[in-house]
Image 1 (spheres, rainbow, N blue to C red):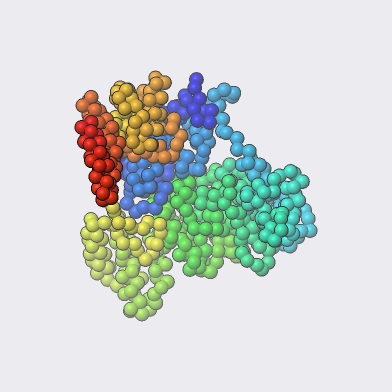
Image 2 (cartoon, helix red, strand yellow):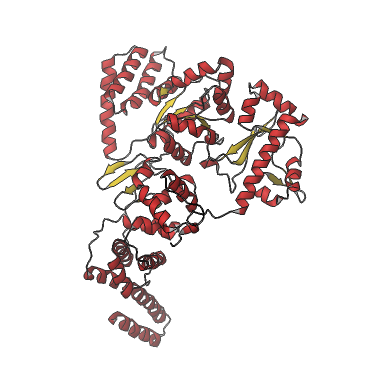
Length: 605
């Protein structure tokens, strides 16, 4: 039994691919729509408004025409979850009940000693900070603060909250005594290098410490809140080997069980909000890493839930942030509702002031995104004045007009009519005219972005497809046929070998000859797993998206081979023509005549 990447046996990889249908795999993260033999959706790897992300069930691959990413089901999980190849295979094997026997045959995830040491250091640091908070004088003030925020011992233990003393070398000494390499610890975000002299100092000082875990519950970073005055209020770990804040959601490791049961996520802005909501009995809360929501985080949420309830601060900034995330979440097919927290309060404040039961009611009665957009717009107008009513109606109608459901449109138009004391019929007429206008614009391109929708999808000019040079197109055509037929690959191998002009094409051909030499049948998804090279996988995906027939005959292959072999000769002829012109310009007519005869000989070939 041969072994593939990371000592994983080929038969394990093949079974994982056989049981991981590409459509099922991608659909957990991307909303796909059928278009002929393909399925299309918005790419989860880059911002786009017009779907260019394509899945081909027949070939079990995906490819994005916008960013160029492509591959099979394993590659998709690697990209979307940040897995290594062995990690992706192991996870997918467990999900599909593929047994991984002890000893030979178990996918071995290559050890990364630096990563392991960093995880150990983070885990130990979290325990140290937690101990210092609960059992020493250093933590007395921090403990008083946490108690004033309504946190009891149970929740402090649950979230492993700690305290970093306001000293320079608490962690430096702790890690030194345990023989950790301090330079490695600085690189891992636990320490900082001294500027004036050699050595290191604690990165976090005088801060309440919130450990940040990966989805398996390992501590990979920290968020430190300053105790008292000072800036910044929150200090996060930097990006490290372990921590990429765009891929992590705070508390996902604890919330995932509840999320999978309810298929619902509560999305907060702050760590304190998540902790308070947990105490209030809501255990599917996660938060972003003190930054805007990212596409990777959205993809993770899409893989686990059907609905997201956004629970941001009730002030203007919180409402504006909620508006930004709506198109991102809805863009991948998630249902979205917005919980209305009292103005000027964050969820943590709300729970402490009004109690858990009332907060749960706020979450249960969260409003639709349309309702929320209308509430947001209304705050900008004085409805007691006629001008204010008209201005609000003009801004509200486009929000209602984009709704596909006539029932939904009627509900909101009747609410608007009642609220503004305007005729329902006139509002309906204006709304219908607006819909007609929007539909005309859509025929000519995407709608312009609305004032309330300043999210990720920026409209760009569509560039005309690039016409490939003849030799380039011929090489892609050959590889397309070779990928689908072993006999075609043998024919090309005998006559062309690896003499492709484009380096990546030559590499793919070499891998393909080896793939068939092992007695394997054509299988694009399995072949791609044997490559383990991002660029080559994307190239294969791109080639297999060509609308080229799979049938071939000797004439087709010979024509393509001729184009491929002709290119180096044509390039040599063009170079010699340039040399001849230079020789003529410098007055060296003997040399020019000699080059001319060489050009004639090459052209005869």
